Length: 386
Image (cartoon, rainbow, N blue to C red; front, side, top):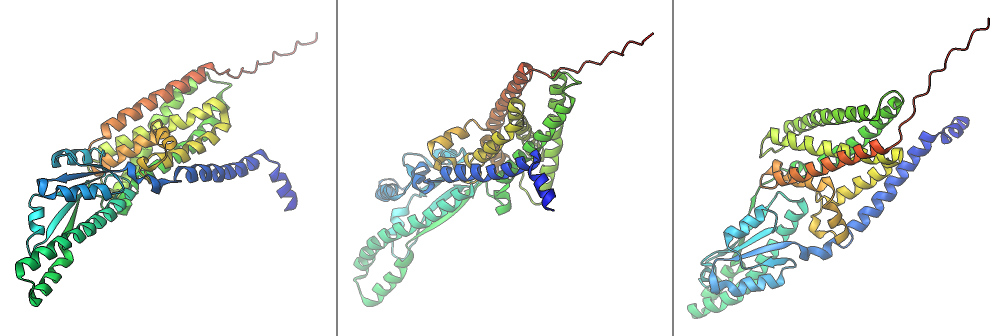
């Protein structure tokens, strides 16, 4: 066994395997720890729209909420404008103070209601954060309303003991919060689909590209570079269509949501999977097997900067800016739109298509500029001695 161990440790594939495992640890540790550092300190990058339909009577409450929220707030929008921005992911929650809110606060025994609206076609952290904030806002306004309500009720009642007790009971919950959602998610399994699809698709594309590159190397001496590149294009396109069909079908069979239809979901997955294939193979075409290290880096960068797990607004400027140039960012945006509903799929598909064209063009350019292997000359037969 020791002799076999010594021999194995000298073999390049074993050395490369160990080095790859080590690089995964180093790359993911560095990128993830630096990307998610300070996320909780950047909540002011999230936006909440405060709609006051009660006019001047509740303007003080609206201003007080805007000042206390740890987010960026918009306070001069109509409800229709706020909902449109929520649909387009420009705001993360709409807080609506309805008409008659202040009058209900001043009425003994009545309960006023604040309406919160969320867009669930977002990373799961957005929903949990906004739900916690909505409860906090409701509690804060309740305290303010109780002080006003005590004075109004006791003044009207003449402050008798029975009436004071009734007033005290009625003031325990003067304000209630009603939360509704657009583009609702049916279960945590559907919420995690974007991250799962990005991870599975890019890792699959990486492994496929490595094996395809080895096969291309075997044929380099007997086939032209252009013919091999053409074969690569056909293999990638056909594989993307078939693999995405299997993946989309499994998601559907296991209870996945398809608000814009199965065909749209399948075609979009095929588009970004094909882009992942050409994007990851470019590094292998450019620098050979060492390109797999760049693909590990690209995988880690895309997982943290795509917005699949943590909103991109909460990342620092470097990772948020870098995500604008990586295909996974637009894959996540499109998946959320096609899967859960809402606009954005067409724009995301257009950007992914541009990245695909650039990756194909750069790969073709590198292929043409690289020196091909020379075919070994066939030795001529030795002359026969007469």
